[in-house]
Length: 355
Image (tube, rainbow, N blue to C red):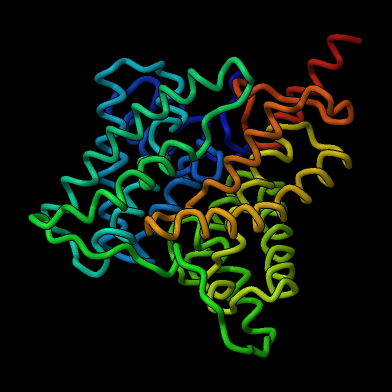
C-alpha cells in the first residue's frame, strides 16, 4: 500500500489506470480526489458528488472550491510533491474546504468577484504549505495533519479580512462561529431529519439538508462502512445536542454534528482496525467533539474565527499520538489508509502471512 481509498466499482480501476497514463486525466483525478478526501476517499465519483453538493448549496461556493483546489493542485505539482500524495487528493481537500470557507465567512452573498478569486488563490497556496509543514511535524508521531491546514488558514484569514477594505469583503458569517441562547423549541420527527442531514451538509459548509443527502450518497459510493458510521454519528450527535439543551437553531443547521461524523470516519476502520473496542472508543470520542466544539466557539468568539473542523482534527490526532497504551486498539499507519473495507482486507492478508 497505500491503498486506493476506493471501493470495487464498475470502471473505477480502468479510470485510475487511464489517469496514470494520461497527465490530463491524472490532473482531473487529482482534483476529484481532492474533493473525495473530504470524506477520506480518493474515489473520483465520491469527489464528483461532493463537487455537485457544493454547487447545489451555493453556486459561488462551488466556483470558489474549484478555483481553490485547482490552484492548490497546480502549486503542489510545481513543488514536485510525491505523485501518490497528489493523486490521492491529499494536497487538495484542505484547499476545497478553505475555498468554501472564504465565501461563507468573508464574501457572503457577494457572488464571484475578483477579490474572492484572489483570496481563494492565496488560501490554496497556504493550505499546500501548511499541509506539507504539519505533515512533516506530525509524521514522527504517526498522525496525518487531517483538516488542520484549512482550519488554521481560516483562523488566520477571517480576522485578517477585517482589513480587506479594498476588496469589499463582508463580515464573518456569525451562524457558524457564534453560540447564542435559543428559545424553547418543540422537536418533531421532521426537525430531527432536517438536523440529521444538515450535519452531513455542514461538512461541505452547507446548511441545506439536500446537500447532506448528496454527501451520504457520495460516501456510499466509496464505502458502506463509512456510510453507516456517518448515519450513526449524525443521529447520535443530534440526540446528544438536544439532550444537552443546545440552541435548536444551531442543531438544525448541523453545527454540532459534522465533527462527530468526521471523527467516526477517520478513526473507525482507518486510524484503528475495526473491532468492537475501536467502535465504542471512536463513537464516544465522536460525541466528545461536541464539547470541544462549544469550548472552541467560546475561545474563538472574540476573533469571529470559525471553529471549522478543529474539534475532530484535535481529538483524532490526540488519539493517534496517544495510541501506545491502548492495547485493545490496533493502530493503522496513515500510509495504509484506504476505505475501511480495503484496510480490513489488507490487514487480513498481513495476519495470514504472519501465521
